[in-house]
Amino acid sequence: MNTYLDCIPCFFKQALESSRMAGADKEMQKKMLDEIAAILPSISLKLSPPEMGRTIYKLTNKLTGVNDPYLKIKEKSNKLALGVYDRLKERVGNSEDRLLMAVELAIAGNIIDYGVKNSLNVELELEKILVQESKVIKEEKRRLFDYPKFKKDLLKSKSILYLGDNAGEILFDRILIEEIKRIDSNKSIIFAVKEGPIINDALMKDALDCGIDHVADIISSGSDGPGTILSICSEKFLSIYRDVDMVISKGQGNFEALSDAKRDIFFLFIAKCPVIAQDVGARIGDVILIYHQGQEDAKKRSS
Amino acid sequence: MNTYLDCIPCFFKQALESSRMAGADKEMQKKMLDEIAAILPSISLKLSPPEMGRTIYKLTNKLTGVNDPYLKIKEKSNKLALGVYDRLKERVGNSEDRLLMAVELAIAGNIIDYGVKNSLNVELELEKILVQESKVIKEEKRRLFDYPKFKKDLLKSKSILYLGDNAGEILFDRILIEEIKRIDSNKSIIFAVKEGPIINDALMKDALDCGIDHVADIISSGSDGPGTILSICSEKFLSIYRDVDMVISKGQGNFEALSDAKRDIFFLFIAKCPVIAQDVGARIGDVILIYHQGQEDAKKRSS
Image 1 (cartoon, rainbow over the protein chains, first blue to last red):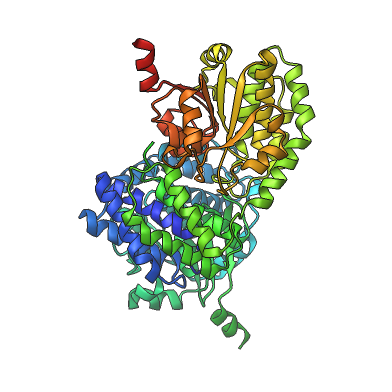
Image 2 (cartoon, rainbow over the protein chains, first blue to last red):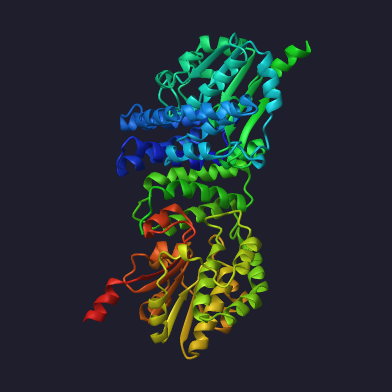
């Protein structure tokens, strides 16, 4: 998707928050805002929000000299998520529809996102997910939740590319991948992480810390933006992306980067900002499972 | 108060919203944001938020050629507020402490603020105020609510300057002024409005439409910013401001402009943004009645 004008105030907010996270003093924080202001007129709104976000976060890192301001937060999120692994597995084990529960939990885990809320209380959010009764997601939050199509495609897909989003959240993805493997252990699952530090997005180390390597092959997408920006992805990744039977994409950032994709993608995320909510026709807080039909894939099927 | 860095993203948001209110197309809206970006580095954070806000809203009006984008909204707010006048009076009449109820209603009316929320549903907000039981304000929202001091000072003050805030809201101020006059009809009450259009702030016409002239003398402060910015106020206003026994100031904007004032002021408002809430030590949504002790007034009393 293109960047909305409403994203611009939010970019300034994100710049401020990330420069604080990098330990910048007030003078440096103001300088950061001035730098964003200086490049604003030259920025094209045809770029996607993650492309804009990448520029902004890179600028923070350059100005503050801190390469990975969210490192400690990522480590903490992984640790906290690992701490509830057994309870999540138990929840899935006790469910009538184990796959559905795993999908719900994977989306619920998307709440661990520092791009939107910088003062996130991960413990509290995890507890909220865990204390909820039988179902994680209330019906009124499922305005866009195409689970039947997701399940149908999943069952027939032999190769799956799973685009990870944030540290901590990826432990929830592991639970879903374990359920997919339980259905058919021969499915090939490739889990993609970001190439370099960007907000609290998961990197290779986070995926290893959360044990994704036990259930999937991990690769870097090559993108170091807060979303899978295809124009900067590696050839290796792009070849996998094009060839797999199914792509499961986690998080708002990946949706923003890939919502106009030419191939079919299933987007799983929580709508966290008014712009995205309006764009997809949902409300903030809604759990989203959208089937995106890519034009090229549609052509293939019809030819 | 000085402008916080956190106000800057909000200025961009306000610029976007006000340019939309003025009917600007997307290109013009982007131009508006670029213009704000261009002046950002030169803006001093020692200015108060209303001083910054004034610059921004003036720029919108200049770029769009629309002098009073909120005119219709102001007219509608006045009309809706007048429509509930009888119900408000009845509420006050049925109260054990009539003055307290009138104070509570006056603060509740401060919810009619387009600077913070552009998509305000005034009907809904008024209904919320009216359907609430005996008391408008729940105890947990009264963290800063110095009614005893307010009442004590009010009873002994012969001359009162009342700084109005928004159109519609001023009808609620009229109710409070009527209660003050009921206590002592000899009290001199001067009601100040803004000099020129700024967001949905009340002007002379709004005060007349809401019948403030029946209960107080109306003057313009001379400020056309979203707060009573003393440096641009008229001599006539400043002389009254300095000489009256008591100043009652409504709204966040007036608080932002006058929080460091040298004279005593009672600030009545709803905390509507995280920056203000944190600054005063309250939470968003809290109803605030703060006694501000000015250094010069303190000196006068001790000498």
